[in-house]
Image (cartoon, rainbow over all chains, first blue to last red):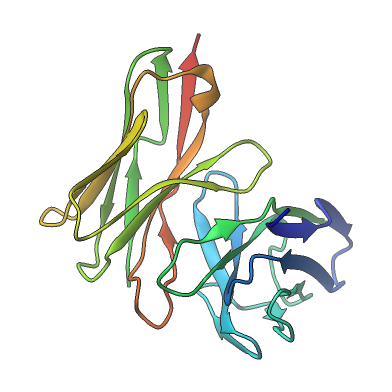
Length: 112
Length: 114
């Protein structure tokens, strides 16, 4: 059963704590992406990676960090420097920059 | 950079009617335009896409049209059904570039009344 998995579905953290969101894909896709979605807004790109051990900042990278040590995994860390971390986080993958992006089910992060 | 505007923000139709959602983009270099459907609490699902070398594409009840000169593209859903109710997002991208990143519109909440 191929696809993109994100865990957990819901995540709660106290302000000032770092938290890592998981994203795994078994589609053998080279490229992976992290987006943030706020109510009534479109998706905004946080980070993307076109290949293992390489990643680039998107439009709203401040307060976030990523790693890409394995082709199938692209975890996102929301650091305490992120001013408004509460949001719905979506991971996506594609065969490469010329191909369609497919999304995971998302993780809803609430920071209080 | 690219900017994508999407209208309307909400759309209510009767079951069986057609629904049209429109998007405009700013960067003439964009050449790939996907549409996503997002149900409540779920990730977006790709429903149809179009590339700039094509003016129209159809898949059963859904179609997308592209006007490169005017820089706008539209999603058409015919014979709407209650299960079409969701938020629809358009996006634009320059496929083949170093990024391939999608720039999204803010979404249209479609409600289909039985």
